[in-house]
Figure 1 (cartoon, helix red, strand yellow):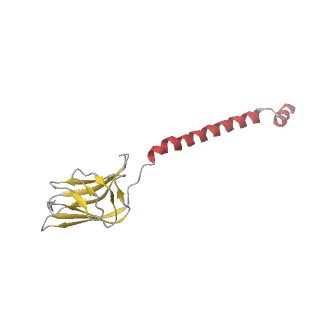
Figure 2 (cartoon, helix red, strand yellow; figure 1 turned 60 degrees about the horizontal axis):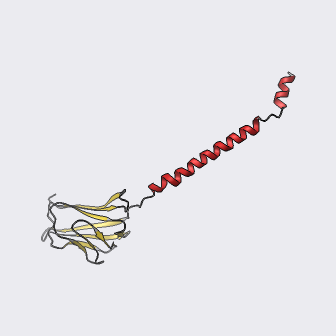
Figure 3 (cartoon, one colour; figure 1 turned 180 degrees about the vertical axis):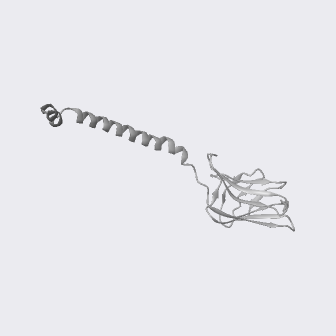
Length: 154
């Protein structure tokens, strides 16, 4: 019984060793978590898509399609926006208000802001055509469709 009492009351070096091991383990875990945030999340902090309200107005009489930025975030060429025509549409489309434009390849120049309107120069948007306004991040890793329209015969 005396040996058991001595073991329970003795002050051996077990507690400091366990304390050091636990401190090292906590330090390693913290370093791993911090490294994960620094190296892993840096790639995931990509640009987020602008929150823009896009309106499409098609006139069947002359085949014109007006795409209007009705409000929300501006869409800049820095962020790259693409106007994807899915159908036999022709001609460049131009912003009336900002004097910026999207060319026939879908490349954006300048900034699309609330109130800006895109319209087909020749009014030749077909009734069976489809169009999407797609935002693509500068890195190209993220995209979002801001608006889409299908003609009445699509």
